[in-house]
Image 1: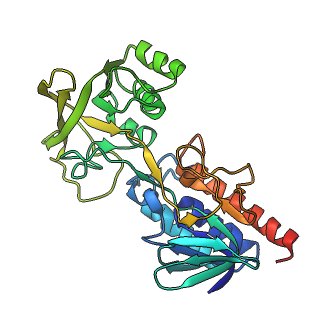
Image 2 (image 1 turned 90 degrees about the vertical axis):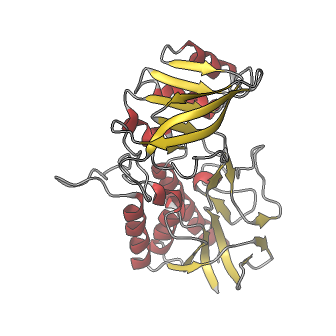
Length: 327
């Protein structure tokens, strides 16, 4: 299959790129290994997406509904969607060749929009209570736990930033870090330690998350098989120095153990030290004709609205690049 523009990944960045690429008159193909929408599919109420406020008496659209709207819109402009996983890609003199498990896709230009995979703590209850008080996004789910007892796991910049955001919503934020010093930048760490609503527990490891009946806590903006009487109710902790084990009540657990960028193997692609794709403001990578957008890109803010904007820029600039190249 040959295209002017191949988009790898159909999260918000890939879906926006598909729309803008098609509207530019490019033969646009999107390949996605799962369902269009990416991590947005996990958002029960996408209430922080501009304009998605719902109608009178109704909640804002879910991440799934917004993603479906974006997919249909892209298809209306002519984008075609196929299912598959791109394992590797290379650029020859004429075009890019992307190898999936079933076929080789060729395209004159490519946008990588493959997103990230959250690092898990791999503790009991983490997966089972995801969306029921366990979250990986404070700005997405924090407002559901105003004035609640919130635990934050992590010691880097993200954990500290998100803990300070949550501290605006409640006076009881407990930041757990398994080491004796925060890994965050000095200024960020100091602001976190000075915040009166944040208690930092050093040398403390989360070993389990427990659920139970909890009438006060809401389920936290995620979809899934949720039950009204099953939410985060407690956490099991361990002191990494003394070995002491104990349990404390909790309404929510926000985990910031990092994330892992996902992308096919691409020779010559320049990444930052964390493995994210480096681009300029035009979303151009180190390889001419190859663009990147969304969470897989080195960016300071990973949100649906940011990814969609980057996808639009990437498609627009890809069209300009193709025009200049005479492709």
